[in-house]
Every structure is written in structure tokens, then in C-alpha cells.
Image (cartoon, rainbow, N blue to C red):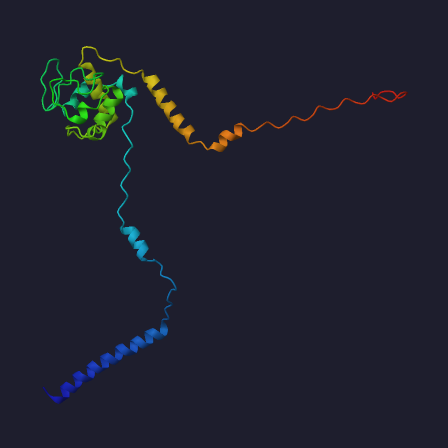
Length: 235
């Protein structure tokens, strides 16, 4: 390559570099950006930590919903259908066998550990009491929580309608089915319990205000003095 051509290439590169520098200087002279004192989007460590924090899990209900008002209208066919989850461990026919769990014929209203020919866990055998509506409702909601130490591994029925249907169907599998609670009385009882809870939370000052003495009534107008002798009473 000739020296003249090399010089042309070098001169071209130098001109390009100089052109970039000149354009940069002219741009800086024409544009004067103003830097903000504070960023538009504050990315603090606390903010980022809050954004990345896992969402709080929803609180679980304290216990099962009441079923008293649902029993009278419970669908027995639906109860039998839901009970199929338990049929592999329990028989419900009169005189039927024990399986992994005891036969449940006549269970509603019967005592805990009602079958003499079944080996219950110590927790169930020593529990005491009877299988009423409320006891069955709590047990079927979370068996291991209601009878701690039970050998029953079933996870429970979370829907109140399912528990009511199953309990109503089990009640039908008996020589003497129990009468259902009156729905109106059950609803009224639940309302009374809610009102009692609300009253328990009322501040004491409200009660004290009812005991405050009433203001004294103003004294009756004093009778007018008798007219002086010789003066006529005012008309």
C-alpha cells in the first residue's frame, strides 16, 4: 500500500474522531439538563423489601360454622353421597361389621366409643360424652383437632352443608333417629350468642352512664305573696 493511501486513511479516522468531539461539544452547549434533587421513583431498600415480602396467608376460621339451622332441610341423598369418602373405613348398616373404623349405625346420640367390640384409641375411649349434633359437627370439621390422638386420619369436611348432610344421613341410620333442632330456634340462639358477644365488648363507660343520677327538677314557682291590705289583687 502506498504511503499516500495510508495517510488518507489516518486523516479520515482523525477527522471522524474530531467530528464526534465537535458534535458532542455543540450538543452540550445547546442542551442544559437539570438533575432532580430526589428521584421520581424512590427505590429504597425498605420499599423493595416490602414489595418482595410474601403475601400474608388468609386467617383460618376459628371453628366450624353452626349446622343446627341446616339439619332439617339437609338432603339425605347428598349426605349418603358425601359419606362415600368414609365408606371404605366405616359400615353404617344395622349389624354390619367393623372395618378400619367402627360400625356407625346408631352413632347419633350414642356415647363416644360406643362399640364394645372395636379397639378404639385411648383418646377416643377416654373422651367421654355423647355424639350430639355439635360434637359431630366439630369432629367432622377437623377430627384430629377435636379428639387429639385419634387414629382416624380423615382430613375433615370444611363445608357446613356437607357436614349437615352427612350428620342428617347418619341420624337416619338408627332405630331411634333424633328429632332435628327447630331451625327458627337455632337461628334465634345463634343471634342471641352474637348479641351476648357484642355486649361483652361494650365499654364500661356506657353502662356507667345509665347509672348517673338524674338532674334535680327545678323547684316549683313559689306562690304569689298576698296583696297588701287595701290593695286590689292584680287582674
